[in-house]
Length: 131
Image (tube, rainbow, N blue to C red; front, side, top):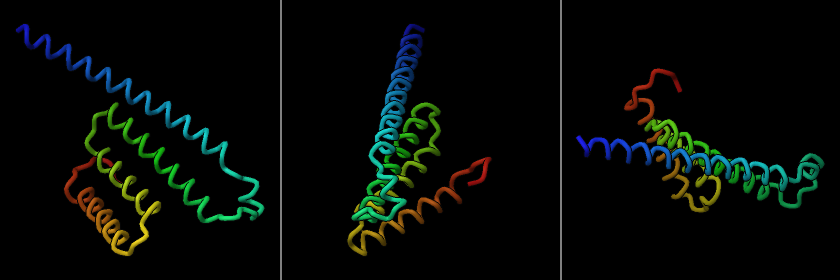
């Protein structure tokens, strides 16, 4: 009986610590979002004077996808739903493809991985709400 109480208290402590970590991740996501807004050269984008538009856009998209991964990770820690793992994997692979897929085989493997994750999500994970 005493062991069950200790296990229950430790489980509660671990859940609380996970919540604190998730809260810290969300604070970092908000800070990262503010930094992205602050560092984005909006005037240069709209006037067409960005010297290396594609590189700047790719960096911003990479940063935004990193923030999305942080949000999904916080959701996973708070809601404890294994479906969020699939979402995290999708965003991580998409970010990798956008950021550093220089070789054609890297791109092919990334696309196959995305296809496999979508297949797992569609056919192996039972969900009540549609994709």
